[in-house]
Amino acid sequence: MAKIVTLGEIMLRLSTTVGTRVTRAHSFMAHYGGGEANVAISLANYGHQVSFASKVPANHLGTAAIEHLKRSSVDTQFMLAGGDRLGTYYLEMGSGARASQVIYDRKGSSFAEMTELEWEIDQLLKDVTIFHISGITPALSDNWRSMTLELIKAAKKAGCMISLDINYRQKLWGANGCTAFLKEVLPLVDICSAGKLDAQYLLAIPAFTGSGNEIIYYNEQIQQLYPNIKVLYSTIRTVYSASHNDLVGTFWSNGKYVESRVHQMDPIVDRIGGGDAFAGGILHGILTNQEPQQIVEFATAASALEHTVFGDENQFSESEIIAYMNSNSGEVLR
Image 1 (cartoon, rainbow, N blue to C red):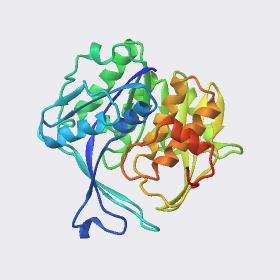
Image 2 (image 1 turned 45 degrees about the vertical axis):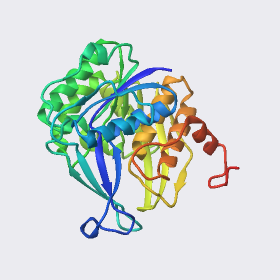
Image 3 (image 1 turned 180 degrees about the vertical axis):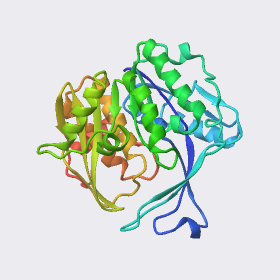
């Protein structure tokens, strides 16, 4: 299997139980997660050789975060120890008409406070097929904006395919800052997760007003701006309530557009990490040379399954996802 490196911040997640608000909570469920770490776990579940690079404090919380990765067979040789704290976020679990809410408490974290790249870059990128990162990392600080660009340039020079999940977080930075960064980084990207809203509000692509498929329109516009991008993918989510969504995956490559079947997710146990499970499925399909329709069906099924368990990470193997794709949803497997 291929060798992949993902890089970003891993965090402690403290979440309420369904029906409890943060302001009334007396206890929280603890999980560990973060976009790039979640993608690493998905790919490791599918048998790939995956390393995750980050920095955590040299204390029990940092150790727990590393053990979380190791349990899923993610290589942790590039996990640095130091700094004062592990980034944290609080999740108020939504239900029905009340949406889930995230409160970040990550300022001053070991990863966010990095001012220089502390890895041996040649070793980090040695024999790597895909280097995956998201737009969350450059949103953490001015230093991380410049360091993210430096890392991507180094990975490109080392012969890696560059995978970027734009993953815009308005609570971390403004649209103008994200747009400025994307103008610098997108000319280096090979595989990109970008949806309709990213195209409109971050890439300044005019809104679709014609007939036909609007996702094809946005993909065509993005590829005209950045012809180096070979793959674009996204999800289309229809939200009926916090616990009832429909999900469709989209995949664009070499001018060909495909969609997955519709997955009806009702009830949703935990929405966080669904996009990361989708991204991991897309990268797996690319790495194993699957056909576009196979890629998007697998990735969307992986995302739908991730919505059925607590925690940020995909907890399912390739065989389990394929079995789900071939079964009647909800049947008892004996």
